[in-house]
Amino acid sequence: MRHKPTRTRTVLVDPQPAPGPVYTRPSKSQMKRDMTGLQELGRELAALSRERLAQLGLPERLHEALLAYRTITAHEGSRRQLQFIGRLMRDVEPEPLREALDRFNGASRAEVADMHLAERWRDRLLEESGALTEFAGTYAGTDLTRIRTLVRNAQKERKEGKPPRDYRELYRAIREAMAAREAPGRAAPAEAGAGKDEPPE
Image (cartoon, rainbow, N blue to C red; front, side):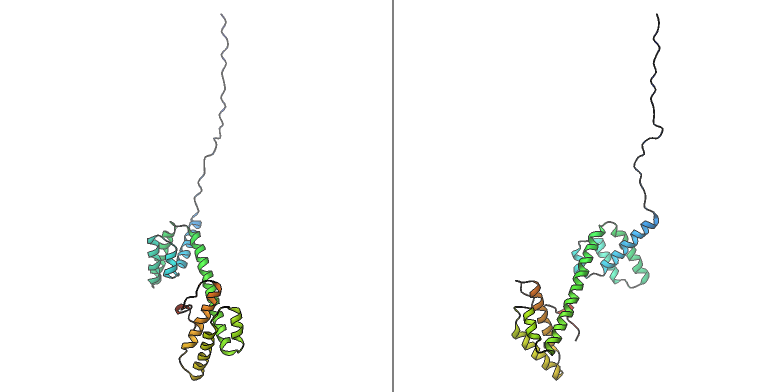
């Protein structure tokens, strides 16, 4: 009886297995740049007013750290606090905060521009006879009787060297007219421009 030869099967094995996922750790210099960027962002946040800072909805610990940073006067103390803020900033998304800063800065620039415009209008109303007609055409619905009275009283104050009460009130009235034009249908606040944006005398 003859035996059939046994056939052997050769299994080919790839000597180079498929590479798995590779994790690339950021370099120390990149990590340092990232931390410096977070600290600078924290410094800008700390410069915001309490009201605007509260609008950002930051974690309580970070919010308190930013407020504490503003009270530190020693250079070394503020440096260490800023480093602490940078570490806390790693737990929040930085881009929404940068976008909020851009909005706040844009609003601040617009506010300064409005202040300067109101000052120029006040100067013109006090010095140019035809400025009131132009102002009325620009800001429709303005109480011209009030503006005219304030102009006359402010001119009298200046001539007699009296305290500039109506001079300041004229500025507020101008700001009210400007605000009413920007937000039609809504009454301008009675003390628009008072306090923080009151121009120098």
